[in-house]
Amino acid sequence: MKKWFGGLITVTLASALLAGCGSSAGTSGNAEGGGSTQGEKQKLVVSTWGFSEDFFKSEVYAPFEKEHNVEIVVDTGNNAERLNKIRQGSSDVDVVFLSDYYAQQGIQEGLFDTVDRSKIPNIDNIYDIAKAPLGEEYGPAYTIGRLGIAYNPGLVSGDVTSWADLWGSQFAKNLTLPNITSTAGPMAVDMASKVAGNTEFNEDAAFAKLAEASPNIVKFYGQTSEFVNMFSQEEIAGGPIMEMYFKDLQAAIPDAKFVTPSEGAYAVMNTVNIVKGSDQKELGEEFINWILSKEVQEASAKAKVDSPVNTEVVLSGADTEGITYGADVVEKLVKLDMSFVNENIKKWTDRWNREVAQ
Image (cartoon, rainbow, N blue to C red; front, side, top):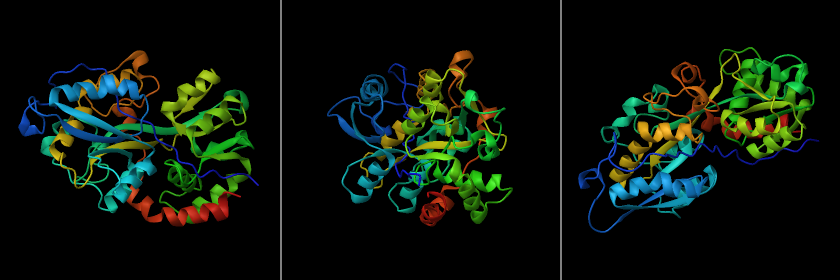
Protein backbone atom coordinates (compact mmCIF):
# COMPACT_ATOMS: atom_id res chain seq x y z
CA MET A 1 0.00 0.00 0.00
CA LYS A 2 1.39 3.38 -0.96
CA LYS A 3 1.76 6.08 1.63
CA TRP A 4 -0.39 9.17 1.38
CA PHE A 5 1.21 12.25 2.79
CA GLY A 6 -1.14 14.92 4.04
CA GLY A 7 1.36 17.72 4.24
CA LEU A 8 0.80 21.07 2.68
CA ILE A 9 2.50 22.50 -0.32
CA THR A 10 3.51 25.84 0.95
CA VAL A 11 3.27 27.94 -2.08
CA THR A 12 6.49 29.93 -1.66
CA LEU A 13 5.99 32.84 -3.97
CA ALA A 14 7.01 35.40 -1.28
CA SER A 15 7.31 38.93 -2.69
CA ALA A 16 10.69 40.67 -2.55
CA LEU A 17 12.26 43.80 -4.02
CA LEU A 18 15.65 45.25 -4.77
CA ALA A 19 14.44 48.79 -5.33
CA GLY A 20 15.77 51.59 -3.17
CA CYS A 21 13.72 53.78 -0.91
CA GLY A 22 12.00 57.00 -1.88
CA SER A 23 8.61 57.80 -3.29
CA SER A 24 7.28 55.78 -6.16
CA ALA A 25 4.07 55.14 -8.05
CA GLY A 26 2.14 53.89 -5.13
CA THR A 27 3.90 55.20 -2.01
CA SER A 28 3.36 58.39 -0.17
CA GLY A 29 4.99 59.62 2.98
CA ASN A 30 2.14 61.76 4.25
CA ALA A 31 0.07 61.04 7.30
CA GLU A 32 -3.19 61.10 5.33
CA GLY A 33 -2.13 57.96 3.45
CA GLY A 34 -1.44 56.09 6.66
CA GLY A 35 2.29 56.87 6.82
CA SER A 36 4.16 59.29 9.00
CA THR A 37 7.46 61.05 8.51
CA GLN A 38 7.71 62.38 12.05
CA GLY A 39 6.90 61.28 15.57
CA GLU A 40 6.54 57.86 17.09
CA LYS A 41 6.86 54.87 14.80
CA GLN A 42 3.75 52.93 13.93
CA LYS A 43 3.76 49.13 13.73
CA LEU A 44 2.55 47.03 10.80
CA VAL A 45 2.31 43.28 11.39
CA VAL A 46 2.76 41.29 8.16
CA SER A 47 1.98 37.57 8.00
CA THR A 48 3.96 35.75 5.33
CA TRP A 49 5.85 32.53 4.60
CA GLY A 50 9.23 33.54 6.02
CA PHE A 51 11.56 32.60 3.20
CA SER A 52 14.72 34.70 2.65
CA GLU A 53 14.14 36.59 5.88
CA ASP A 54 17.43 38.52 5.83
CA PHE A 55 16.78 39.62 2.27
CA PHE A 56 13.29 40.72 3.16
CA LYS A 57 14.44 42.71 6.15
CA SER A 58 17.06 44.68 4.28
CA GLU A 59 15.55 44.98 0.81
CA VAL A 60 11.78 44.58 1.13
CA TYR A 61 10.64 46.11 4.37
CA ALA A 62 13.36 48.67 5.06
CA PRO A 63 12.41 51.09 2.24
CA PHE A 64 8.76 51.07 3.27
CA GLU A 65 9.67 51.44 6.95
CA LYS A 66 11.89 54.42 6.23
CA GLU A 67 9.39 56.26 4.08
CA HIS A 68 6.42 55.68 6.38
CA ASN A 69 8.22 55.85 9.73
CA VAL A 70 6.86 52.41 10.54
CA GLU A 71 8.22 49.22 12.05
CA ILE A 72 7.24 46.09 10.15
CA VAL A 73 6.85 43.03 12.38
CA VAL A 74 6.83 39.72 10.49
CA ASP A 75 4.76 36.70 11.51
CA THR A 76 5.85 33.57 9.62
CA GLY A 77 4.54 30.10 8.94
CA ASN A 78 2.76 28.09 6.28
CA ASN A 79 -0.66 29.01 4.92
CA ALA A 80 -2.67 26.82 7.28
CA GLU A 81 -0.74 27.75 10.43
CA ARG A 82 -1.03 31.47 9.84
CA LEU A 83 -4.69 31.36 8.85
CA ASN A 84 -5.44 29.37 12.01
CA LYS A 85 -3.77 32.05 14.14
CA ILE A 86 -6.11 34.63 12.64
CA ARG A 87 -9.11 32.34 13.18
CA GLN A 88 -8.18 31.89 16.82
CA GLY A 89 -7.45 35.55 17.39
CA SER A 90 -3.98 34.65 18.62
CA SER A 91 -2.13 37.18 16.48
CA ASP A 92 -2.35 40.92 15.80
CA VAL A 93 -1.73 40.62 12.05
CA ASP A 94 -2.61 43.60 9.86
CA VAL A 95 -1.66 42.32 6.40
CA VAL A 96 -1.68 38.66 5.39
CA PHE A 97 -0.16 36.93 2.38
CA LEU A 98 -1.91 33.66 1.48
CA SER A 99 -2.42 31.47 -1.55
CA ASP A 100 -5.84 32.01 -3.09
CA TYR A 101 -6.99 28.61 -1.82
CA TYR A 102 -6.50 29.66 1.81
CA ALA A 103 -7.46 33.29 1.31
CA GLN A 104 -10.87 32.15 0.07
CA GLN A 105 -11.38 30.33 3.36
CA GLY A 106 -10.56 33.53 5.25
CA ILE A 107 -13.05 35.49 3.18
CA GLN A 108 -15.83 32.94 3.66
CA GLU A 109 -15.19 33.01 7.41
CA GLY A 110 -15.33 36.81 7.56
CA LEU A 111 -11.71 37.20 8.68
CA PHE A 112 -10.64 39.87 6.18
CA ASP A 113 -11.61 43.50 5.80
CA THR A 114 -12.67 44.98 2.49
CA VAL A 115 -10.11 47.10 0.67
CA ASP A 116 -10.50 50.60 -0.72
CA ARG A 117 -9.21 50.21 -4.27
CA SER A 118 -8.90 53.98 -4.68
CA LYS A 119 -6.05 53.70 -2.15
CA ILE A 120 -4.36 51.02 -4.25
CA PRO A 121 -3.97 52.66 -7.68
CA ASN A 122 -1.35 50.16 -8.84
CA ILE A 123 -4.17 47.61 -9.15
CA ASP A 124 -4.94 49.35 -12.44
CA ASN A 125 -1.54 48.26 -13.76
CA ILE A 126 -1.79 44.53 -13.10
CA TYR A 127 -3.21 41.67 -15.14
CA ASP A 128 -6.99 41.35 -15.06
CA ILE A 129 -6.77 37.86 -13.59
CA ALA A 130 -4.86 39.28 -10.61
CA LYS A 131 -7.04 42.33 -9.90
CA ALA A 132 -9.83 40.63 -7.97
CA PRO A 133 -9.23 36.87 -7.89
CA LEU A 134 -11.56 36.45 -4.90
CA GLY A 135 -13.90 39.38 -5.48
CA GLU A 136 -13.71 43.15 -5.87
CA GLU A 137 -14.02 43.78 -2.14
CA TYR A 138 -10.85 41.88 -1.27
CA GLY A 139 -7.16 42.06 -2.01
CA PRO A 140 -5.42 41.38 -5.32
CA ALA A 141 -2.93 38.70 -6.29
CA TYR A 142 0.54 40.16 -6.22
CA THR A 143 2.12 37.25 -8.07
CA ILE A 144 0.96 34.41 -10.30
CA GLY A 145 2.74 31.12 -10.81
CA ARG A 146 1.81 28.25 -13.05
CA LEU A 147 1.45 24.56 -12.38
CA GLY A 148 2.76 22.53 -15.29
CA ILE A 149 4.60 19.25 -15.81
CA ALA A 150 8.27 18.69 -15.06
CA TYR A 151 9.85 15.46 -16.26
CA ASN A 152 13.14 13.66 -16.83
CA PRO A 153 13.35 12.82 -20.56
CA GLY A 154 15.81 10.06 -19.75
CA LEU A 155 13.11 8.17 -17.86
CA VAL A 156 10.19 8.57 -20.28
CA SER A 157 9.66 7.53 -23.87
CA GLY A 158 8.60 10.32 -26.21
CA ASP A 159 7.57 13.87 -25.51
CA VAL A 160 5.22 15.00 -22.77
CA THR A 161 2.76 17.63 -24.00
CA SER A 162 -0.50 17.22 -22.07
CA TRP A 163 -2.00 16.35 -18.70
CA ALA A 164 -3.26 13.17 -20.37
CA ASP A 165 0.34 12.01 -20.79
CA LEU A 166 0.57 11.57 -17.02
CA TRP A 167 -1.83 8.65 -17.49
CA GLY A 168 0.26 7.26 -20.36
CA SER A 169 2.72 4.40 -20.47
CA GLN A 170 5.69 6.74 -20.18
CA PHE A 171 4.87 7.31 -16.50
CA ALA A 172 4.35 3.67 -15.52
CA LYS A 173 5.21 3.33 -11.82
CA ASN A 174 7.33 6.48 -11.82
CA LEU A 175 4.77 9.27 -11.35
CA THR A 176 3.95 11.68 -8.54
CA LEU A 177 0.85 13.79 -8.04
CA PRO A 178 0.09 16.44 -5.39
CA ASN A 179 -2.10 15.12 -2.61
CA ILE A 180 -5.57 16.51 -2.08
CA THR A 181 -4.66 18.53 1.03
CA SER A 182 -2.01 20.52 -0.82
CA THR A 183 -2.56 23.77 -2.67
CA ALA A 184 -2.26 21.92 -5.98
CA GLY A 185 -4.44 19.00 -4.88
CA PRO A 186 -7.73 20.45 -6.19
CA MET A 187 -5.96 21.14 -9.49
CA ALA A 188 -5.15 17.44 -9.78
CA VAL A 189 -8.85 16.71 -9.34
CA ASP A 190 -9.78 19.21 -12.04
CA MET A 191 -7.12 17.97 -14.47
CA ALA A 192 -8.33 14.38 -13.97
CA SER A 193 -11.83 15.45 -14.97
CA LYS A 194 -10.41 17.03 -18.13
CA VAL A 195 -8.30 13.98 -18.96
CA ALA A 196 -11.45 11.87 -18.60
CA GLY A 197 -12.89 13.87 -21.49
CA ASN A 198 -15.13 16.39 -19.76
CA THR A 199 -15.41 20.05 -20.73
CA GLU A 200 -17.38 20.73 -17.53
CA PHE A 201 -16.13 19.46 -14.19
CA ASN A 202 -17.31 15.93 -13.44
CA GLU A 203 -16.47 14.75 -9.94
CA ASP A 204 -17.19 11.05 -10.45
CA ALA A 205 -15.14 10.93 -13.65
CA ALA A 206 -12.29 12.80 -11.95
CA PHE A 207 -12.00 10.36 -9.07
CA ALA A 208 -12.30 7.36 -11.35
CA LYS A 209 -9.42 8.75 -13.41
CA LEU A 210 -7.32 9.47 -10.32
CA ALA A 211 -7.88 5.92 -9.10
CA GLU A 212 -6.72 4.72 -12.50
CA ALA A 213 -3.43 6.59 -12.05
CA SER A 214 -2.92 5.39 -8.48
CA PRO A 215 -0.92 2.22 -9.33
CA ASN A 216 1.71 4.36 -11.05
CA ILE A 217 2.17 6.75 -8.13
CA VAL A 218 5.42 6.40 -6.20
CA LYS A 219 4.12 8.83 -3.59
CA PHE A 220 1.54 11.60 -3.41
CA TYR A 221 3.69 14.55 -2.48
CA GLY A 222 2.64 17.06 0.12
CA GLN A 223 5.66 19.35 0.00
CA THR A 224 7.66 20.43 -2.99
CA SER A 225 10.85 19.24 -1.30
CA GLU A 226 9.49 15.69 -1.59
CA PHE A 227 9.07 16.11 -5.35
CA VAL A 228 12.58 17.55 -5.67
CA ASN A 229 14.14 14.72 -3.65
CA MET A 230 12.36 11.97 -5.55
CA PHE A 231 13.19 13.59 -8.88
CA SER A 232 16.84 14.12 -7.97
CA GLN A 233 17.20 10.46 -6.95
CA GLU A 234 15.35 9.35 -10.11
CA GLU A 235 12.66 7.64 -8.08
CA ILE A 236 10.11 9.41 -10.27
CA ALA A 237 10.12 10.51 -13.90
CA GLY A 238 8.02 13.58 -13.11
CA GLY A 239 4.62 15.06 -12.42
CA PRO A 240 2.82 18.37 -11.87
CA ILE A 241 4.84 21.07 -10.13
CA MET A 242 5.09 24.84 -9.85
CA GLU A 243 7.38 26.34 -12.46
CA MET A 244 9.30 28.33 -9.85
CA TYR A 245 10.78 25.07 -8.48
CA PHE A 246 11.99 23.85 -11.84
CA LYS A 247 15.43 25.36 -11.28
CA ASP A 248 15.91 23.00 -8.34
CA LEU A 249 15.02 20.03 -10.52
CA GLN A 250 17.30 21.18 -13.31
CA ALA A 251 20.19 21.59 -10.89
CA ALA A 252 19.94 17.87 -10.18
CA ILE A 253 18.93 16.70 -13.67
CA PRO A 254 20.28 19.20 -16.26
CA ASP A 255 18.21 17.68 -19.08
CA ALA A 256 14.94 18.06 -17.16
CA LYS A 257 12.06 19.70 -19.00
CA PHE A 258 9.13 21.84 -17.91
CA VAL A 259 6.08 22.01 -20.17
CA THR A 260 2.80 23.87 -20.23
CA PRO A 261 0.21 21.17 -21.00
CA SER A 262 -1.89 21.64 -24.10
CA GLU A 263 -5.03 21.79 -21.94
CA GLY A 264 -3.52 24.77 -20.09
CA ALA A 265 -1.35 25.24 -17.02
CA TYR A 266 -3.06 26.15 -13.74
CA ALA A 267 -2.74 29.59 -12.18
CA VAL A 268 -1.49 29.58 -8.60
CA MET A 269 -2.07 33.01 -7.14
CA ASN A 270 -0.76 34.50 -3.95
CA THR A 271 -3.00 37.19 -2.53
CA VAL A 272 -2.59 39.96 -0.01
CA ASN A 273 -5.41 41.06 2.32
CA ILE A 274 -6.15 43.27 5.32
CA VAL A 275 -7.21 41.39 8.45
CA LYS A 276 -10.54 42.50 9.91
CA GLY A 277 -10.06 44.57 13.05
CA SER A 278 -6.66 45.93 12.04
CA ASP A 279 -6.07 49.51 13.21
CA GLN A 280 -3.64 49.99 10.31
CA LYS A 281 -5.99 49.54 7.38
CA GLU A 282 -4.84 52.59 5.42
CA LEU A 283 -1.18 51.83 6.04
CA GLY A 284 -1.85 48.25 4.99
CA GLU A 285 -3.36 49.47 1.73
CA GLU A 286 -0.26 51.63 1.16
CA PHE A 287 1.83 48.50 1.67
CA ILE A 288 -0.25 46.52 -0.81
CA ASN A 289 0.12 49.32 -3.33
CA TRP A 290 3.89 49.27 -2.86
CA ILE A 291 4.04 45.51 -3.39
CA LEU A 292 2.23 46.00 -6.72
CA SER A 293 4.48 48.82 -7.92
CA LYS A 294 6.61 48.44 -11.04
CA GLU A 295 9.77 48.88 -8.96
CA VAL A 296 8.98 46.04 -6.57
CA GLN A 297 7.56 43.73 -9.20
CA GLU A 298 10.49 44.15 -11.57
CA ALA A 299 13.10 43.65 -8.88
CA SER A 300 11.29 40.59 -7.55
CA ALA A 301 11.14 39.06 -11.01
CA LYS A 302 14.82 39.69 -11.73
CA ALA A 303 15.74 38.18 -8.37
CA LYS A 304 13.67 35.07 -9.32
CA VAL A 305 11.57 35.53 -6.20
CA ASP A 306 8.17 36.23 -7.74
CA SER A 307 6.56 36.31 -11.14
CA PRO A 308 5.31 39.83 -11.88
CA VAL A 309 1.67 40.80 -12.25
CA ASN A 310 2.41 44.44 -13.07
CA THR A 311 2.04 44.82 -16.83
CA GLU A 312 4.54 47.68 -16.92
CA VAL A 313 7.36 45.27 -16.07
CA VAL A 314 9.35 44.51 -19.23
CA LEU A 315 11.83 41.64 -19.12
CA SER A 316 13.96 39.90 -21.70
CA GLY A 317 16.50 37.11 -22.02
CA ALA A 318 17.54 35.31 -18.88
CA ASP A 319 15.30 37.52 -16.75
CA THR A 320 12.25 35.72 -18.14
CA GLU A 321 13.50 32.22 -17.33
CA GLY A 322 11.93 30.31 -14.48
CA ILE A 323 9.07 32.74 -13.91
CA THR A 324 5.55 33.12 -15.24
CA TYR A 325 5.90 36.18 -17.44
CA GLY A 326 4.02 37.94 -20.20
CA ALA A 327 0.40 38.45 -21.20
CA ASP A 328 0.60 35.63 -23.74
CA VAL A 329 1.40 33.23 -20.88
CA VAL A 330 -0.74 34.63 -18.08
CA GLU A 331 -3.92 35.01 -20.13
CA LYS A 332 -3.88 31.30 -21.02
CA LEU A 333 -3.70 30.07 -17.43
CA VAL A 334 -6.59 28.04 -16.01
CA LYS A 335 -8.03 29.55 -12.83
CA LEU A 336 -10.02 27.41 -10.43
CA ASP A 337 -13.09 28.78 -8.69
CA MET A 338 -11.78 28.75 -5.12
CA SER A 339 -15.23 29.25 -3.67
CA PHE A 340 -16.34 26.03 -5.39
CA VAL A 341 -13.17 24.26 -4.26
CA ASN A 342 -13.69 25.19 -0.62
CA GLU A 343 -17.33 24.14 -0.74
CA ASN A 344 -16.29 20.67 -1.91
CA ILE A 345 -12.84 20.05 -0.40
CA LYS A 346 -14.05 18.02 2.59
CA LYS A 347 -16.04 15.70 0.34
CA TRP A 348 -13.13 15.43 -2.10
CA THR A 349 -10.71 14.62 0.69
CA ASP A 350 -12.97 11.84 1.94
CA ARG A 351 -13.27 10.40 -1.56
CA TRP A 352 -9.50 10.71 -2.13
CA ASN A 353 -8.81 8.72 1.04
CA ARG A 354 -11.26 6.00 0.08
CA GLU A 355 -10.76 5.77 -3.66
CA VAL A 356 -7.33 7.11 -4.60
CA ALA A 357 -4.78 6.99 -1.77
CA GLN A 358 -4.63 3.24 -1.26
